[in-house]
Image (cartoon, rainbow, N blue to C red; front, side, top):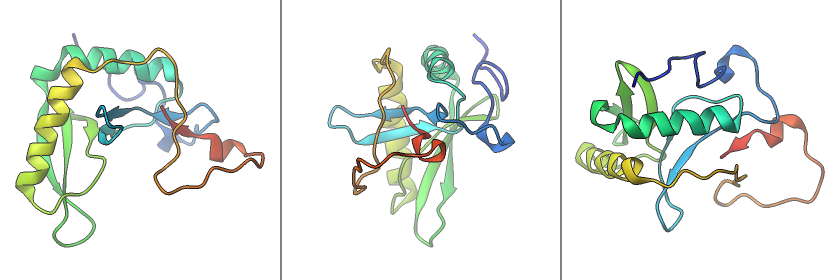
Length: 144
């Protein structure tokens, strides 16, 4: 099954200026809620993100890992591609390339058998404080 490209089933990529209150990314979480990976693109709706993850699960064998250097010396991450299109990135930086590769292998194994939720779940970044004040559209842009 082909992987949708930008502007395809994944919806509009946020870099085109189409941010909305319903835009977001998907995250691959371990059973302890630790992030293993995340989408490399922003989706215009939960439905398009979910549909794309289900397609990606069928094509894990076609995925290729590419190590990347982080923003600070000594940091390493990874990007997963299908047909040279980035589909998933590491959610954190690692101290060595080998640790990054191991983490990617674990993320791909987890993606293959992940349970994809049928409902969006708003997440708050670690360390962020929850607020009861009203939020604007830009602040509602979230992670599913």
